[in-house]
Image (tube, rainbow, N blue to C red; front, top):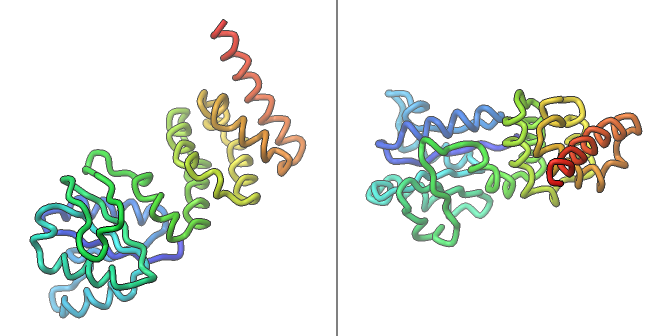
Length: 226
């Protein structure tokens, strides 16, 4: 994805900030993290200003201590001043955005529940096409039935945003990966409406193959309900 992210956090929260950086790197997004990326000899104030200027996405890890840090507050104020900056507020303790970005909804997180789906809604606002392409790639790499269902669930809120090419890609990857089309929820709930609406984009062999598997699972489900 074509973006660069500045992660703003209070020093006590550097572990969760590091986890966010890892998640972003897993989908090809570079990010700046002060305790990793500032050399001891660097003029850190100038470095932070330079990195905020370079960034197109600003992730702030909110907490009571965040707003008690004058540096954190200044970073978020600078980011809010940028009309072209996508701001993603993540809250550790229920703290909400204040000041110039108080109009932006925050998301409650913890180290235990932090995962890519927390970031995707805001990333879609920044780069809809790139983010959806990345979600489809993640679905296509599913390695288990449960993983396929969890991965597919990430795309469901954004189905109306998919282009014809993305719908075709999603269906083709689902046909190629048995962990997807043989996962119960995918075969009976997630794939059938997409296949019904966009199946014409596939070649006949792939459409018949995927449709046959979905119909088999739906038939088994109906039998169990009798």
